[in-house]
Image 1 (cartoon, rainbow, N blue to C red):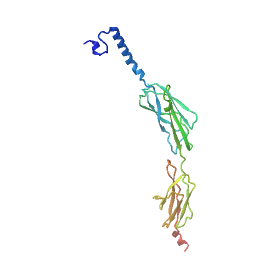
Image 2 (image 1 turned 90 degrees about the vertical axis):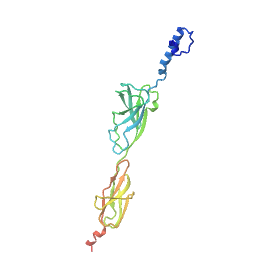
Image 3 (image 1 turned 30 degrees about the vertical axis):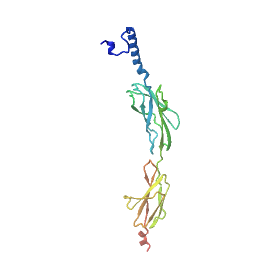
Image 4 (image 1 turned 90 degrees about the horizontal axis):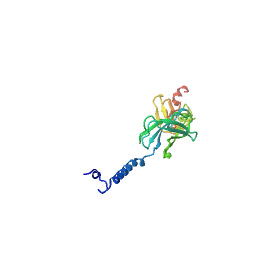
Length: 243
């Protein structure tokens, strides 16, 4: 069997050598050109904003950290692109980034911005983070937006009994900032019993001994705070002094 027959070329045996060579050359060019036609453009996307997150203790040096996903082919080590963030539509803060190791296809890079913004004032912050790669064909996924809320800490307020010496009556909570989630009472200041009450007024009745009451105030996601206890004394403790 001849070499030409072994590769099953679709030509007749009478074809000239020049014709066969031309055909082989054309096939080789077609095969070599195919990967170039299928090349995938480089595309980076910001996928996750890791930090900061909403809370009660945001500072004036908050860390901005986010995840970049590579949709395209491997990005060679030493490649340079830029990353940025913007708060509440303000000025764009931009930094250049050179990667040391290759960023492979379908892999991620977690980046922490060097600049740290001041989020110490309570309120809502609209945060936009982004990545800019030259010749990126899909700029619509380059930016990710998120809301970060600095919640003001709750204020427990003050509990005052309407009448401090009484067998029954009510206590009032004033000056609080947040929601009352419950009340608590104790006769020794150590063991506290929770009372199912979410209002700013707490009733009591038939106390057998001096009892302390306090309110629990919360503003999620902040931790709950307790008001300073107020003590109520039952009347019978003082009757012997007046009889």
